[in-house]
Length: 133
Figure 1 (spheres, rainbow, N blue to C red):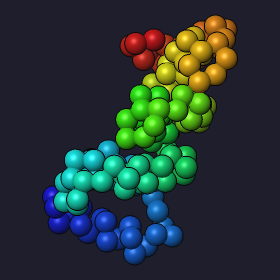
Figure 2: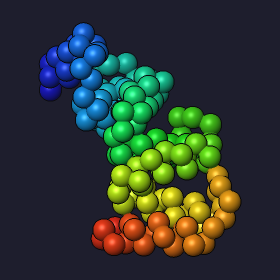
Figure 3: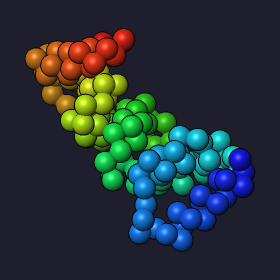
């Protein structure tokens, strides 16, 4: 597996114009930098790759970036930034992000409290079968 990671890393680095957001997200998800698997552990590098995936429209990466900003892990807590990333993912139909956005509207964390918006987003997540909703 280390050889596969090294090959993928080399390919992505050399062919940067052909970035595939799912591969970028998988690099983060698999924890190459956060866990220190095959490369030196680096929260900065992990966030760089996660942000790149999120900026390219990967809903799962957007949701995780929202969680990082909401909880203040690896970065300073920033609820407004969390809402931004949750909304981008929620608008793509990502149920966990829809639920998170609904919770933030309900609590007023990072935006003005709005129970109608909260209900709307939680219902969107519930309609997709997202259990916590």
